[in-house]
Length: 511
Ligand SMILES: Cc1cc2nc3c(=O)[nH]c(=O)nc-3n(C[C@H](O)[C@H](O)[C@H](O)COP(=O)(O)OP(=O)(O)OC[C@H]3O[C@@H](n4cnc5c(N)ncnc54)[C@H](O)[C@@H]3O)c2cc1C
Image 1: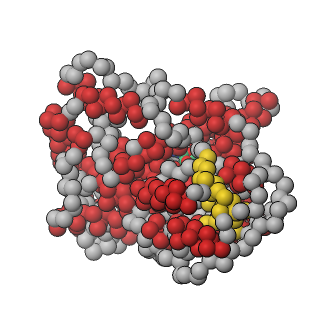
Image 2 (image 1 turned 180 degrees about the vertical axis):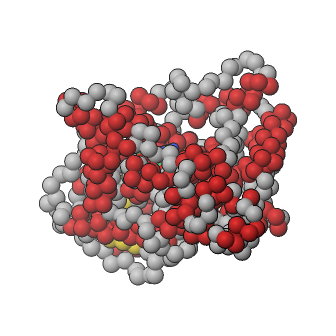
Image 3 (image 1 turned 90 degrees about the vertical axis):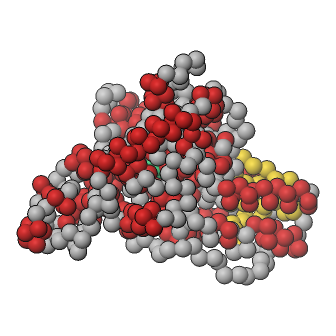
């Protein structure tokens, strides 16, 4: 009887509960499936697929050291299980719980049904600090801590002969788009190198260094694609971070030292990883539905009018006429990564200034991110679009952001060649440059660089008043309480909703 380890977004052998448990049962089939429905979906891209391909090569090598062959199927999991069952009896399937998109949720449901039909035990194990079946957030923090503190899972020594199953051959479906020339490379070895370089050299720049897109590429950990593919587990990262802090304190560094501040701030982001993923785990429809229903219908829900399409296309192509927005989209197109602050600004510019529904723009960013993690992505997309009902509205002005985060224009000039010769004074608002200077600096508006799609101040006013109107008409205090109960942080520093009163001042603090 065969025990299947179904690798999903946990492409490593270290701290791998599913693998360890299966190895105790007997002969193993280590399986990865290129799920056609996943890679043909609107949120998938070739750059993510290429990254996963590299992770699989690395996983195959690691498994070889245990004499376990990795079998990769292009059929999708149900067809693959049927093919395996035709050759061997299956005792059990072992995998990690996945907080994926609605598609992976449906795939999981079909596997549960298949196991029920063929009387196969399916064991799922917790991978991150995300708790399945959680009713509210009250105990979440304690459970997160318990999971992260647990010892790293070790593997038993492999003695059994593990079979090779002949799976039907079929071409792997190809996700949309092109690979990105400057993306991070996948695999366990890369993940460890990145973690090591961050903790030993770069972490001292983390605190205060991750908001500007100029410094963030180096100052951030850059672990996101490895965490998303599971080349490294959250528990390993948390424990490595804490070990480094202990080492620094033992060496006499004070809590105010840049390294210690960086480590503390980094660890709080590791909490956020699971805090956000928990939202999608608890409410999988967040990928397609507003977190708070007061926002239904306030933006064009279908994007089928010509003006919305024009704005959407220009935003996706990085032709908004706002240099920082366009530079970020240009960097994403090449690298598949941008820092948090700029992700928030991109979403904010689309949702508030261009008044586009978050679903289409969220899908575009999902495809652009090599580190696409549905559980972080969709709750963040909603938060930065003002549709959660429990977070304060944060509308970024891309010109102000450019002045704050790229004061000398290095980032903008690097990513937008047409603006390279434009002097600082016009750089972030080139549409204000007189016609003779446009010619002189080689940046003629509408020829070399687009005009802004809309007026920022007018657009901000419009966004605020539309959302205030929706709030006035549709605010439902009980729904807000429910959203907060299920998804809100229990951090004491966060704003809380007072249960009884609903004055307009309080309502505005909720949005
Ligand atoms: C609209 C939007 C969409 C996003 N989509 C994704 C996504 O698809 N995948 C993704 O990994 N992150 C996403 N983020 C969160 C964040 O921008 C990235 O995690 C971070 O920029 C990745 O770089 P890093 O690993 O160097 O981060 P670091 O700052 O070094 O953080 C370490 C890890 O902590 C987690 N983390 C950091 N910031 C956040 C945050 N704000 N919320 C939740 N977890 C966080 C990530 O796992 C990250 O890898 C999104 C943010 C926004 C505003």
